[in-house]
Length: 457
Ligand SMILES: Nc1nc2c(ncn2[C@@H]2O[C@H](COP(=O)(O)OP(=O)(O)OP(=O)(O)O)[C@@H](O)[C@H]2O)c(=O)[nH]1
Ligand SMILES: [Mg+2]
Image (cartoon, rainbow, N blue to C red; front, side, top):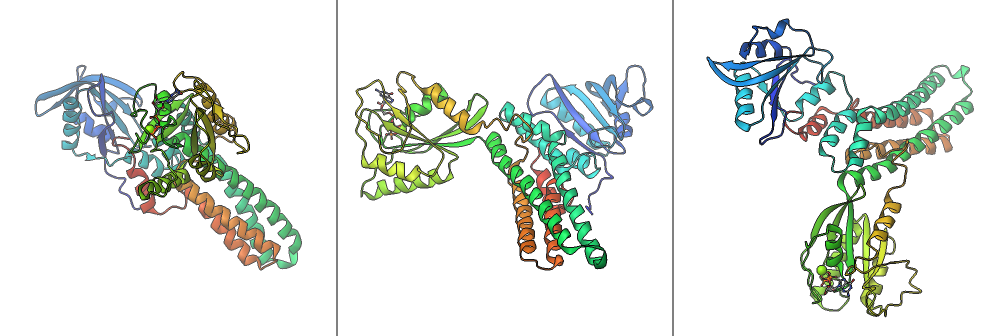
């Protein structure tokens, strides 16, 4: 069990640093209301501890005879609160000094400064939400697009928890059958049991696989599609980046080799975030420095979720172009033939490439690039039930572990090895899935997850 001190009352500023209309100091714990009462002076002489839950009260925060700020105080009593503990939220004026002074007053009354994410951690430890929901809270806060926010909201509502719960329950049922078969061998037809287990395990494998597939989509919507613009020098790579950004971010000249350093920018294309990386042009020569460029292009291509491979339509296909085609052939690539406004000399028939013809100069064909990207990444799945529910590498790693164990089960069954092996692997899968909801996770891992939260959440 987790050894966490839930008995002390914690406090933090929950609003963002800086000036705003309102700032909020949040207090949670068994002494939250009493503590607030010590510094809250209602103009009608109200005592917070005598008020009903979920009510708001007007007055001043006063300490050592001095008014610190004029405030509105919300009183929320356990258990129907964010943390399931008593919560008081003090709405102050939103200046940094005002919220800080009120927080200091609360600390002086005996509250402890909350750690990052501690309110949400308490919600988790007190059983109000599971870990998928806690992580959804961070993801909503950090969402860079509406899509990733929508996905996180679905998780907060328990969509992922339900799926994990279903999978775990079906595994548990199988485990129970095996235990029964071991305990009462005379009552159970062994082959029957194995057939049932194989079927159940295959179903579980499908379920886990579809969640893993959604993890990749989830990552893309969360962090952006890592998009690398590749091409030989002077084809218009930096110009393309600028066209996406609708501003002159990267330096563009007619001198080949203009871009030296990697430039990267986040752009939002119809709700799909692209993390676009402009690179130095690739030259396939024997020159050592240029070779480094090719190596770098190769490693960028390896890391990319999407490659935009740019050709210059006004020049003939060169060795550099061929090298780049070779280098990107197994990757998600969109080929672009640029400079359509000029006389065309490029012949890419026979390369198997179906490019988008564009002219960055005349802003032609850029929409078609967007359409291709949407078709590639917006699988429609996102809209429906198999929504990208998985967030982050942690969940994916647990799913991969579960998958491995389930695949071991199939192997054991196929080789009619002893039941003990089956139950061992099923148990491992059951536990790996439990890590996602936080049921079978080590304390330090949980601490680490919450430490990535912002203060006051
Ligand atoms: N005619 C024409 N010129 C273009 C077009 N797109 C880019 N250019 C020009 O091509 C030249 C090279 O453009 P850049 O965007 O710097 O090319 P790059 O691929 O980034 O080049 P390096 O950084 O040197 O590898 C510049 O003079 C651009 O103005 C286009 O669609 N038509
Ligand atoms: Mg450039």
